[in-house]
Image (tube, rainbow, N blue to C red; front, side):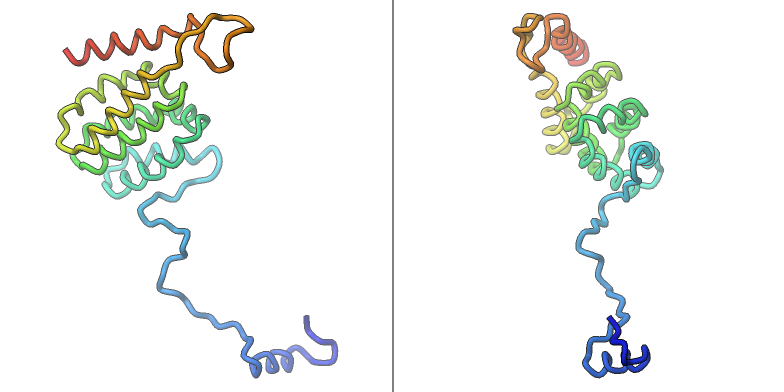
Length: 193
């Protein structure tokens, strides 16, 4: 709001005298909402494909940052569906064999979050993730084993099968869908023996 009676330069001079002039100072600190341990996430439909590329990177820090970002995104079932569709489960399966402890820990954390969703459990069975996770039963990192156990726990705790029809509770498995639990048990028995 420049008063009409003052020209622009004299208005700036008046502001300077009052101490209300903006200064150009560059802070040496990051903005408070920037997390340097997390990968920058692309927008829209490009987010998960970009993270999948970063999961396959040779750079350790890039893989770790991608896993951190993936942990946040996998709480949404739609993101889990897209991640399975673009091949993130295969990338995560390969990362279970990584030599870095933090990569294995974050990978098992992502998988345990994915196992909380029905679409994630279906993906586990289709991509044989149970067999790959079973190799971590003797992992030296206790957090990795805990995350693996949590993933197995989520896989095993499927809703009870209910009769089909209008009286069936919403979201409950029908008798035709309860095969997943029996298949999980069979795969787990085969991999642990």
